[in-house]
Image 1 (cartoon, rainbow, N blue to C red):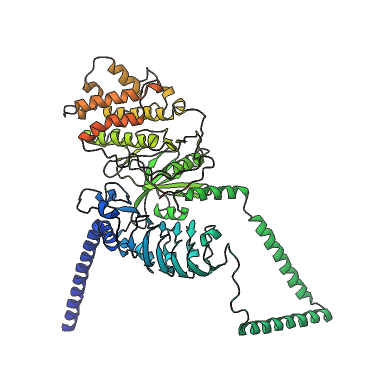
Image 2 (cartoon, rainbow, N blue to C red):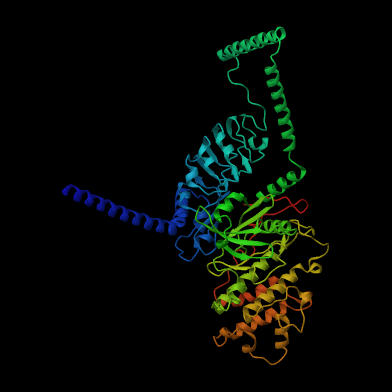
Length: 623
């Protein structure tokens, strides 16, 4: 009994210690999750010599505001108001030192560019543990030496790998051929030797291996057999001689002896099987349609990461109905949780004659552009009839659901929130229309349903399935229909201005505009919000007759009148009389400033644009 009691005491002690240990681990992980990305950047800054003070002047850790590290030079965050690093681009800053181990603390990092610096030493052998989720890795134009670590093959999400213009030696690990998502690979201008990997998922040209005298195989000359004139050559010759002798003896035997009927049957059967295999190969020969789809997919992969259909089936639990978060004209939206813990939204397109065009337009727009008021596109899937897009999940849904909830739900929108949505939407559209003279984008389908809200109610423009693209040469991009003529004659921008005016009226009145097109508008239709408010404003009216009751008497009447005036200018029947989105944003900016909502840091930022060729639609990623 005493022994059993002692054992029980020991077990209790172990359980108690285990619980305490688990609690401490969870607490530690919570703190690490909250501070890890800040610590990551501090570690990077401390470990690198910065001779031109690029990081010293920009990376100010004394700031404690939300998302302060997102303002650092070369840092792009998942959201502008949270300290969660998406990519780090420190190209051409003259940085010195070895590869910083601190990158391991940036747990959500998917892109890293350290090219054109003076970094030296070896590439860490455990780089797969430091950058587990990276899709883009550029270490080119440095002074890295030693061998390429085989662990890079464990970076399963890797799409782009550039190690050219370094001092790397030894062989290229053949394990790199297992990188199933790799699309761009280069190790040119190093000191590498031996056979190159067999990349099955990408077409790697000889240029990717240029100026490495010892490399062979793949797109270059064949590798020579090793030790061709040593003792092994004698053994090989002896083996060949024995084989030839055996064949001669067998042939003479067949010549002088009758062939057994069973042997004839076996030989005939093998011959038939060989012929069947040849026929089967011809049946599986790629068709012209397959080659066209492969080319199309290859172009899309230059814009955004390709994800397999199997992966999307897994993260949505086979597209279970419980995961549905939205239903649109072109597809169903699902909520998904990926292995790295990120919540994402997956749009599965319906099979229709319009799905192909809408799918391509979405990728060609959101794959090219990055802005705080555009919904981030993280991936796509194109397999047979299945077409899916992967976006960042927006926990607060869309503006329409907040303004027009079911009767059983009570949702309130304070004036501050409505101003934030209006100003952010105006800024996003102005950026699309005017940020780059060579590449302009017009959504053509703006409504309160396609304005999504993140966790801080920052508006994100979505639904680019009918978007129009325009460059200075009046050429169509992205496969959308384009008509010759000047921008003002086309009226693409004015349609977006009109739609913005509708959304602004909805924000003010909380009334729904049910008319889908301007042509369907009728003065006798109570559901036409534009006609209703214009008729109302032509008479003597009070704010109580126009705006949402919850906004009355809170001291914002002057701002509300300004917004009504802006909305009415946007929905004028003559397109030429409507203002541009830039003029709209500049007018609304003053109201946004009163509420501390103006952030123009990305307004004219063009380095985030992924440009396209006007003639062929080819794309080039600019980091």
